[in-house]
Length: 140
Length: 161
Image (tube, rainbow over all chains, first blue to last red; front, side, top):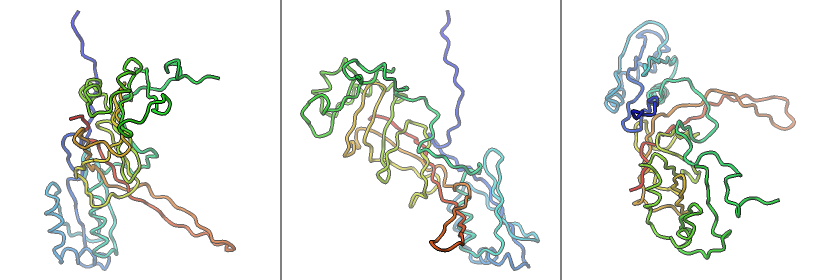
């Protein structure tokens, strides 16, 4: 009888050996005329975006001039994307939105009410009162 | 697999030798457990199946987290001075265990005995929710929108050296 391996589906665990930042592209959209784009125009003029882009070499920064309110659109791995409205925000607020969203995975926000999320089987198994040795068993 | 035996020192009336350091073992290794108060973790290493069956409890801001390799740790705050992609060396480990053996030290296990690292994989936020606050003798209810930060770590390495 040939020996068979135990079938197990592979899990993609970004970060176990190597880590790839999920965000790979940012599009900064602004308008040259509208007042709501004043903050992003200040940001582009100040050159602060260059230093941010230099820190994150794996992310493509694209600047698009279009009419309408300004917005940031983020492209993530697994075809996820996110759009953030930055109308009437000042320079520092836009930078904060940019830094926050680049570091997220693009998946839906959720609240996990436990400390650890695990896909591994429990090392110790499930506790059972019947498997405690006789002398340590709870006696009535 | 289910045979667990982790008696406390007090329970077995053993004098506290070598501070809180001890190896608690299964029943068959009971006599060894009494005498061992060294850093010899060969039993633990042998039982851990190449760190597949290994868990550790580390403390972060004094809160314990029980982890195995590949687990995600969800911190309900933005970790200071950390960015996505950073590697953290977790050096406050109180317990390392396998199915049958446990090595624990409340003051922290020596760092040359193990390797426990995590990567910051995500800094994100919780979903938006609202909290309501009232003041005494005032009918007005104030509503505050809340969206706290979350930091997610991935345990990238857990092994005995």
